[in-house]
Image (cartoon, rainbow, N blue to C red):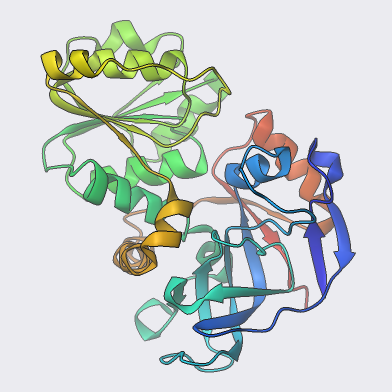
Length: 327
């Protein structure tokens, strides 16, 4: 089968299309004929060697849509040819014609969700599931709270902002890195959108209950300082590639604030059923349009390096998907 591999860590140019062995499902697994694969910042981290214990060559790709190809021993509830979406984040493999995945991380696109396009189905498992879990299971957002989201125009940020509104946040504030992204972020339903260099003075003292930080560095330190008592800073990335930020436990004690972390891959390894539950809970929000998954570009296999570069250069908006099945 065709696959995009990482033969060595490095720049986007290392991504290579190659013929590899088609995987077979093991106990508790299925294989999926991939139609589309989501393109994410996580796969950039894989390619750059940031993720520990990654054996090369490696096929990246943390989410897909497609149809069930084969069903492994012990798996029930699926049929060959059935339309599905899946989180392939544990072992990767989404940038390929066939991917093997734990059946617990596969979401059936049944009668209730049959209206969803396969492009969108490939773009929701990572970001929208993350949004649901961060707000519901990690930050325990309550209706009426104020949420600030960094990288608001990106794939994850756009999902978090919309999900916060759908779950009852009273005020959702977006922070972006360039003027070109302000209008786009506003179109996603943010109450306010600010540039990263200008947002602090505009919102200081206004009572922030939750800050979602994908950026790290100064954004992390500032986010913690902006929180109200009982506020929660959720750390879920370090796109700035800044040095780690130290947090004083005593300061958390004195200020009555919390710092929480979220890693979808780790959750998928240790708690796949909880992740699948969140994905299934999130999917109806996408189907109903309450959370719009904005697929801004469908990329061919030959153009995957360009897509990765646009994510690294922070010029991308919304979500890109890789078209794997061409017939």
